[in-house]
Image (tube, rainbow, N blue to C red; front, side, top):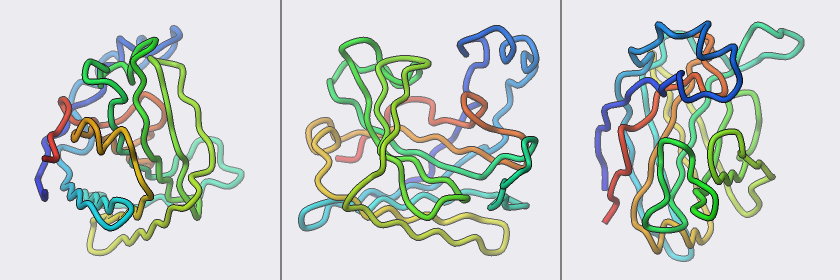
Length: 180
């Protein structure tokens, strides 16, 4: 599967807390309008490639509290009815992987709703990331991924640090993407 996915701005009104929904109420247009995704099963795992336009990469944020790294995430539902927009729901988790340009490896991620994200080191994974000619290309080599194998669909998120995107400020797929 190799597809171009149109992205939307994650709805700020859904963000937990009071600051982001008020301060970013006018953020309705995605900073990143589209991304390409390829999901390929392999022997004993998966290869996921994400690519998107990014005119000014942000790779380093050390000691700079007002800078945010570029990042991307891909996740799959643990159950057929797991909602993508709220990062799952209680008892209906989503799981996946998060790459950040300021880290050498991947995070394994799991959530059961907004504000419940759990991160841990993603063991047995490899990542390569290249920025060239205004585009990121990130390749995730992943071990067995039961949620993806069972549900055969993913959702994705892209953060452009240069546009102050972080946490719930991001561009996301408009729904689950079948990877049949």
